[in-house]
Structures are given as structure tokens and as C-alpha cells.
Amino acid sequence: MARLEVSCPACRRQHSYTDLVPFRAECEACSADLHVCITCRFYDRYAENECREDAAEPVAKKDRANLCEYWKPLAAGEASAATSAADEAKKKLEALFKKK
Image (tube, rainbow, N blue to C red):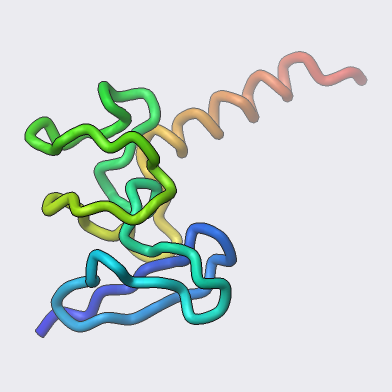
């Protein structure tokens, strides 16, 4: 049995599940939906339909519970590749244009 860790997109509280995360899973602390696009490792706001999984159906609201069967939780502390790259680029631009 695999242990899955999901971080709440609203309050960042960690939740543990065995084998799968239910479609209707909610955070115990703030009641935010957990099975959402923004907590998925395939989420990429710069990809078509904001998802790197080609076979997944488009989801309109990325922060709401959905029935996507391709959903896989981000590893604890992991950010999506696109988000990490964008953050790194912003830091470089800020350093370049920072007033001395």
C-alpha cells in the first residue's frame, strides 16, 4: 500500500492517504478541496488547458474538486516544473532591475 501526501492548496496542511485520494477529499482544517488541479503534478499553467497530461479532459475551475482520473498529488514541498521555472525567472528579473 502506497502512502500519498497531499498539501492543502489553501492552508498548506499535509494530509495522508493510503493508495488513493478520494475525489471529494477536503482539508480537515479549512474544508478546501484537495483533489484539485493545482495540487496535481501534471498542473502547468503554461500548458494547453493548464495540464501536461494529454489525455485528460479540460477542467474549468482548477481550484475546485474534479473527477480527473489522471490526478497525481505533488510530492511534499514539490512545486510544478512550470511554477518553479517562472519563480526563478522572476527572481532573475528582479535582481537585474533592482535599484542599488
